[in-house]
Structure formats: structure tokens, C-alpha cells
Length: 285
Image (cartoon, rainbow, N blue to C red; front, side, top):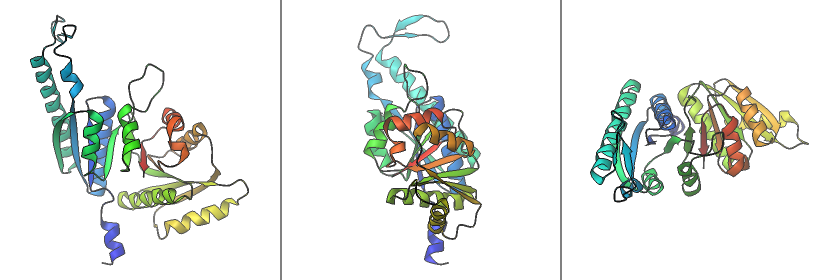
């Protein structure tokens, strides 16, 4: 086996970190991580973070809890918080075990106590891919990128897979390609995943207004090299975020891959894409 063949055999992501918090979006992230890990022969690590802020509630007299059984209201003391957090941790571990066994993959689970963002950033150092629910709590309508996801996108260069409840990893990959060095790297990630999952690849390549589409398509195919799987390339002028989301949705992709350096995947533009996209998003460095 040549060195190139060995590199192709090596999983793109060998260690996938999943942030667990019992939300429906976190469970969607767990299920997607397990499916991806099974496809590329990776392992997953479930991390449940005991938010230090939970334990700061107990000493305050205004902290109360409502019994799920009787509906009675009682003081929320430190012991009660500890018991509930331990129970939640065990529930997360059971969920991880169930999903991993169904997917026939190796897994590990751990619990850390501290600040959510700092603990997740620390854990991400040993991971090849971070998977988490993309939706945060908001008083406004529509999906919003969660605070933790925003912090990770700003503070780590590791690839991040964003999911939410109701969105599944489908049977094809769509890659956004803008011919920057980061865009080329994202295309190579898409190529390797396409090979390892043995699926089809669609590339949305941005072109200048005065460029011939056929020239851009030829460049993309040159970058892809000997990819022997169904591939389609669409050359378009760089659209606004809303129109890009509509375009991607029309292609029925199961996973969208793009570089986080692309302006359409930053700030408010990313928020608009999240609000209208119908598939998970993998943001590379």
C-alpha cells in the first residue's frame, strides 16, 4: 500500500468530542456523531459539564424547586442540586452508551465541573472534531447560534459540526468552495469524507461575474483529482446568506461543509444561514 493509500485509509476524524447537555439539540449531535463515527471508524467521547453556576444557586433563599411528582414547592438546597446533577450525568452516560452500542462504535464518557466554555475548550484540545447542538436560548423567534458554539468558533481552530433537533446527516455532502486556501482545505475535507462514507459530493463553487462557469468547474475537478464517486459542481456568483441557504437546501444535501473563514459563515450571515438551512453544518478551520 502506498503512502497516499495509507493516508486515504486513515480516518479523517479519529476522536470525536460530543458536548452533552440533555437538550434535544445535544441528543441530535450525539446521534449524528455516532453515525459519523461508525461510517469512518472513529470513536466518540461524551462530555457532560456540571456548570459551576448551578451550584451557586443553593445558598440563596429565593432558590426553589418544584417536585415533578407532587407539584410541591420546596427550597433548593445544595444536597438537592448535587443529587439532580448526578442523576443527569448518569442519564447522559446511559444515552451515550445506548447510541454507541447501536452504532457499534467505541466510546468513553466523562464529567467535568466548571465553566461550560472553558471546560469544553480544554477537552477539545485532544479531539479531531467537536460536535454540539447549534441552537441557543433566545427570546427572539427563529434559531440562534448558542453562546457555547460562538465561543468555540472564536477560540478554537478545530472543525465543528453543528446540529439541531430534526436535522440528520443525510446521504450526500455539499461543499462551499471559494478558491481561498481555507476553501481548498474545506474541499479536501469534503473529498476525504465522501471517500470514507462512500457517498456523493456536490460542490458550490463561487466565481467572479466575468468568469466562465466551465473554467471554474474545471478548476474544482482538478482539485478533487481522482475522486471516483458521483460528483457535481455548480459555479455561481457568491450569493447573500439567505440565497445560499436556499441554494443548498434545493440540492438536498445531507451535510454542508465550509470554511469558517468564509464571510458567509461568520456573525449575522451565519445566523441567517442557520435560520434557513435544512442540513447539519461542518465548519472547518
